Structure formats: structure tokens, C-alpha cells
Length: 189
Image (cartoon, rainbow, N blue to C red; front, side, top):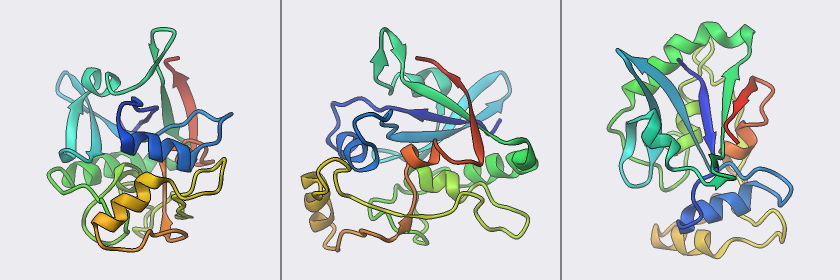
């Protein structure tokens, strides 16, 4: 329970490609999605925020199918909260589960009762004072190689009739996978 599954999403989706380009450099594994593992009865689920369905609970097998493959193996890494944070796991899984049915956060804005994937993780893992243990970072929607705003994001936020939240507090799967709060305990690739 509570492990974080970071995946490199399939490149067939325009949003996934934009996330990869704005959160990872060419020499990095471009994690574009993350979910929280939940064991229930005899099944293993992943609680995740998806653009198509909002906050859902997906069977592990189905979640793994969303990943790109390298040499036939899914590009998935398992992150686990370090021992000093393990006491937070049961409440984090419960908190994430409480968000089932909420909408996806297309605005990438904290505090609007909607969540994108890494935002769901950030606001599920809370310390004893109810503060997120994963700190916010300044979001960027610019290509990490060119420094130019990805065309997808320009179109996306224009459609929402809002400014691109460049520099606003948030998070992303690629940076979260490098957090000192977790250890990558397994990779499937």
C-alpha cells in the first residue's frame, strides 16, 4: 500500500508528449504519470488522476498497460516512502481514496478541488500537521531542451481562457520520482 508507480506514458497522446518535454531532459527517463498503490481484498489497484475519467481506481494490470515499453518491458518505476515517512502511508492511501470521483485538474492549479496525477499524490501524503511532505515546485510548461513553451500548453490554456501557470506552485511526476522523500525500489524495465 502507498507505493508510487511512475510511468512513461504512451507517446500517442499529445498531452503526454507535452508533459514529457516540459518536465524531462533528453537524458532523463520522462515519467509523465504517477499513481498510488492500494491493496483491496485480493486485488491490487492504483488510485490515479486521469484526464478522461478524473480520479479513479484502476487494476494494476490495466495501469501497467498505459506505459511505453522498452525491450518488451513497461517503463514503470516503483517509488516507496522512506522509512521515516512510512507511518503516513495508511492515511495517504485513505486520503487518495477519498478523492475518487473528483474531476481532473486541467488548470493545474492547487486548491481548486480537482487533481492532476502528481498533485493527487502531493495532497494525499500529509504530515501530522496536514501539510504535504512533497514540497511544491515552480511549474514550467516550457520544453526543457529548447526553453520554448510547448505549443500544446499554449493551445490548452487558451482553450481554458487562462494564462499558462508558469512558475506557479505545483509538481510533476518526473521531479517527484527524484524526490529525497522516496526510494525507487524497483523498475520493470
